Image 1: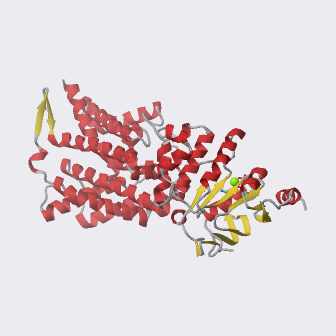
Image 2 (image 1 turned 90 degrees about the horizontal axis):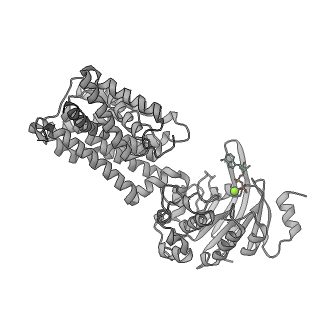
Image 3 (image 1 turned 180 degrees about the vertical axis):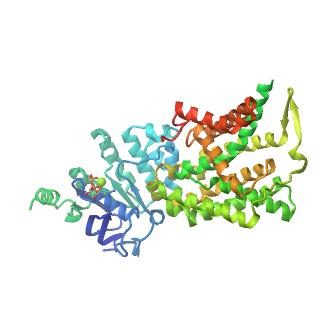
Length: 235
Length: 287
Ligand SMILES: Nc1ncnc2c1ncn2[C@@H]1O[C@H](COP(=O)(O)OP(=O)(O)OP(=O)(O)O)[C@@H](O)[C@H]1O
Ligand SMILES: [Mg+2]
């Protein structure tokens, strides 16, 4: 087994006096798609924010490619090849579609993704490139958010609830595009409320419950009973 | 003809107010920072210009080549060394710190240059004029207005046509996500303050050619700058140009009625516009 690309050990997170994560142990292997599921407020987004450097972490809690990244700023983490499609898309409203994508390339990492590649993946964005990003439909905005993250040519891509607030047909389209996105040895973490969807696209799954890992296993092995116990805490 | 003259002179005077305001507008737009020391930084620019003209013997306009980059560097250092630490969800710390900075600047200038009024010598430029359609226009006010339009145009171009401007807008929209995209907001804010103070240097030197100055006049320049920004609407650079012109015209029209009313009528115009349109004439950022 190769060394994990991302490794968390005893990861904790706080919002003021409130503790949101209680010692998370988790890893992502190179080329792996990992799913994280859990109820509302379980700490999934907090975990994503910790990994990407948006929250302050304790030393030595997060290692990326063997190096401690837990104390780095988000821009420094991004430069090492970690990108995120944030919950709620969070496009830059005063930037056009094309400008949103170009901001993603700001870290200056070389690789297969550039404007042309993103437009080939989502041709509608080419047509809409000069529009304000927030004038697009929810699904198209999600495509911009995904494209923006890809533009940094990441090695590890984090998706935080990409189906949130989208119509089922749109969700289907977005997930259909995933294999074209996660390729060339890229690893991914997919945070998803739709458990069936999460299990389908991932190799392994973690379930979070109130800031702790309540289940870990191969996506095709975990049973429905295990999941509902881990999800809702019915012991 | 007299009234037309007053309006034209007021428009040109407004050019100076636009230069006072542009830096304020820029940094408020990028980082929501209200800089109480802005007027004193304009005065600092004037004094730096004075020092360069007297020691190196340059014409004040040529001194821009030195003072503009110098103020830019001061801006970057000020932002990274001091102001970045005050930014956050609370609006009060930056207000208090820039107020403190204002006091320090005034006293520092007083120590260095004394309270005696100073003026920069721009030679023939100060009195030169041209006659257009029966109106006599000073070359210096015309030049000032030209600088104002060029500065606003340049800032607008930077904001909407360059990678730096894209970074300014992204950080202004969403600091966290911008950081996630590899933009270090502390650096971007430093660059914004550098640009703002570079513009402030132009304002300071043109002020110092036009009138005499002493360390205490910063507060008044800050007010004119603020009024221009707010009349035009927060976050809108072309609005700031309009705001400066409106303020200048209101002042010269007031002075036309009674010379003692110049400043007062500017403030009145500001209050009336604020009462009718609380967000200014052309707001871009919701207050
Ligand atoms: N900015 C914040 N300040 C204080 N508490 C917060 C903040 N953000 C999240 N929390 C709390 O931290 C806990 C974990 O929230 P988090 O957003 O990580 O959950 P989540 O698993 O992503 O939920 P969801 O499925 O609703 O997105 C929750 O109890 C939440 O109320
Ligand atoms: Mg969440």
